[in-house]
Image (cartoon, rainbow, N blue to C red; front, side):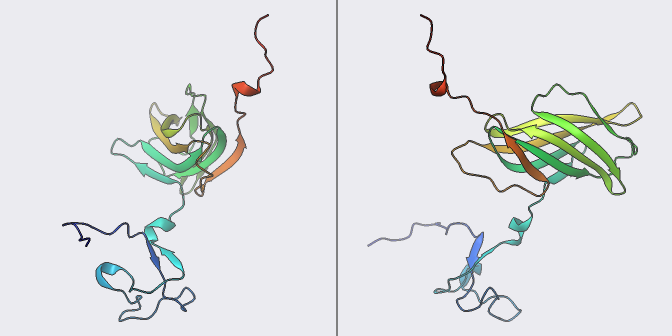
Length: 192
């Protein structure tokens, strides 16, 4: 007879199923919450619709500022050998002023196409080519009329071509795929 090991826990709590017959509406409990069993899980026998936790609904590019005033822009999952247009909003940076332009950075994979001043900050549009898989970081620099500049790091999680198509965040748009070189498709027959 199998016994549970000490300290074993159930897997993830990111998804819960709505009770059958509710058509996506929670079954009313004491405070408008679905009736649940122990530890916040639905009661046995409930199945039907899938509901995700609130934190999973945020599907926009995330911009955070560190204590040095630099920014980290997380653009989510991308697919290798694809080109993307990424648009994000930086909050106002007083030391840059309203007129901001990109400084030249020697990165063949990230290119700033426009910076637009808005009342709520600066809208930055850039093109990014996902050139290898893994968690990649590319940097760009923005400058105003003063001597200082702000570093913006764009972070992407790049999937290989065999792992499907990623769901893109709001602000990320695929604009094309790079041609993939396959040596088996070459017309070259070697030296004679």
